Length: 249
Image 1 (cartoon, helix red, strand yellow):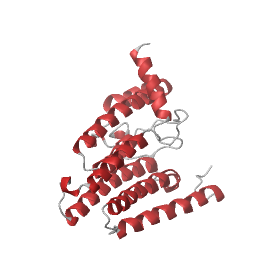
Image 2 (cartoon, helix red, strand yellow):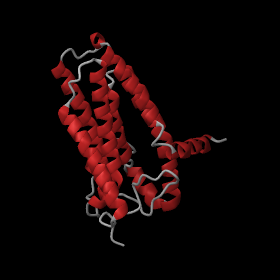
Image 3 (cartoon, helix red, strand yellow):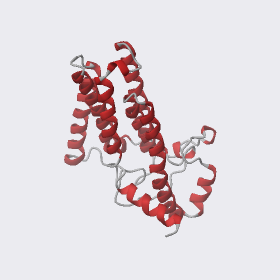
Image 4 (cartoon, one colour):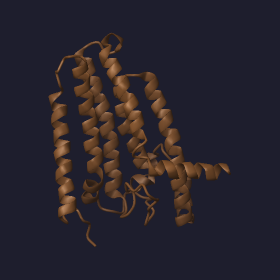
């Protein structure tokens, strides 16, 4: 089998399960986090304030990734930048807005969301391993997606791809989006990611305190976690029981 065919096959498989496989990394990271919490003498941060600021920094990094996703989805064309896993879908080619400075902004957002979680472990080698895994993992997915876009949009895609970086933004290329921001699309698609992110941080906080036998939970974080779950449930109800989040036909 040719290398390109092999990479495309791997990319197709990884694309289909891209929402599941990172959970393996999460489980490993959670184990390392609990190990650090159980052995505070090995933890580089020696007091509660340093620990709090470090966790806050991790959360901010993850929220930056989430906001990148929100911006991308909000300004993307209809039937693009979705969460589909069964097959590639793109009715149109996004080339303006954030897509004018980087070809894969959603994966940039995903990277920062997961990086914040990986950093929570406090394990330097795990963080490095995560970064390497992430880029090898998405390299295959990006290859498969770009093959699909190249065949569907031809020269329009090639001309855009030739000047637009794959993963590291080039801000000097920015072209204002030709679409208005679509809050309905954001609320439909990104409610899951926000709730999952806040739940993960809350679970890490709860587990860390319990394993130290010091139930001094971060009340602000737990409040945001509850808010995210309530928001998710409300939006889920609105999505399936009303037409408030439907786009005009």
